[in-house]
Amino acid sequence: MNKAQLIQAVAKTTGNRAQAADAVEAALDAIVRAVAAGDVVSVTGFGSLAPPGAPGPHRPQPADR
Image 1 (tube, helix red, strand yellow):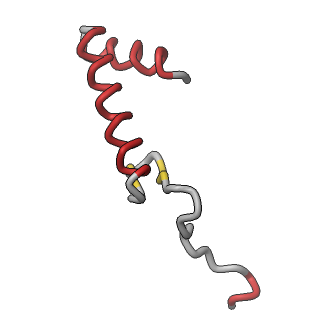
Image 2 (image 1 turned 135 degrees about the horizontal axis):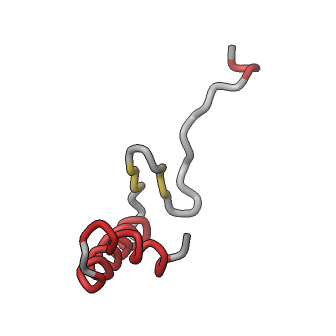
């Protein structure tokens, strides 16, 4: 799904393409600004976005046991 398709999907729920476009643009802008500032953005049920070089979550490896 690209941004135009996301806007279209949100517009189906809101009934207004202009408002959907504004909402998607605002959300993506907030995410990009947060990651660019070095923050990790976590959206429950979706995933996490982190700036390059940020440490990822520690996942136990079989050798750790």
